[in-house]
Image 1 (tube, rainbow, N blue to C red):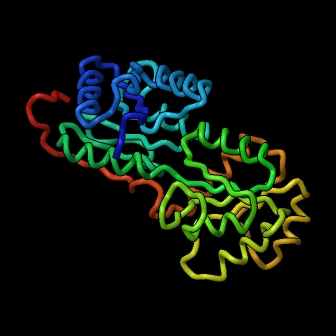
Image 2: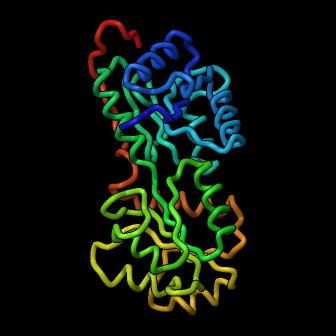
Image 3: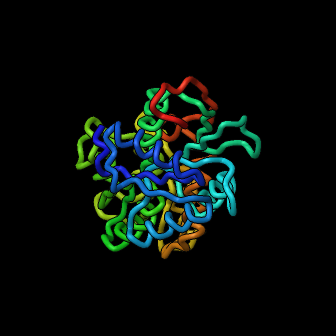
Length: 280
């Protein structure tokens, strides 16, 4: 995998640890300019906000547990509460205490094996949740993509249900050959060629075609949407224009409730020997 454009945020109050992690990442092909640092959780949140203002999102956060001003656990909670879904690796020399890890969060006990850590980093970076936005209005697709991409989602677009089906089956203009498992399909209700209800019916008619979540999005009131989708049972209904906070909360809830193989490593702790030359 090419990591030259992958952005990583390293959060640790120890400058030597930050330097060592930077060296570790660069040794595996990450660009030095794309590795950002923060000395505590508060600075980490500021870096994430600054990135959003620059219309990008970090692909990975690596953080210490105990830091002054704001520790790693509190920072992680704030990140998730703001709707960000990028993977987070929590590094510590002590056994973990605190609330259970959530999706896409991994605890690593120091010292650790460098190759094992890289394999974990590689798997997490490739686990970005994938969303297919289906809408005949380009402005709507662009707006949704901007919001989701800035929070760490991989977003693809389709102009109607027929195009969406082709992409899911690997016959459309998806960036993934052979089709793609989308964690969430966000679909308009009224579209030419194939509308939202027909799309959902088609997805449900063939076992294994799509196992992700389906959100109906329409300018019509929720009651009207439920009537049109009678018997089809989308996972959520939303009215356009979206309230971004409510929209991101719905996305997070669906991903947490219906965690699936394409998104995120399972919470775990790992420990191993770190060879000489990388003092972590």
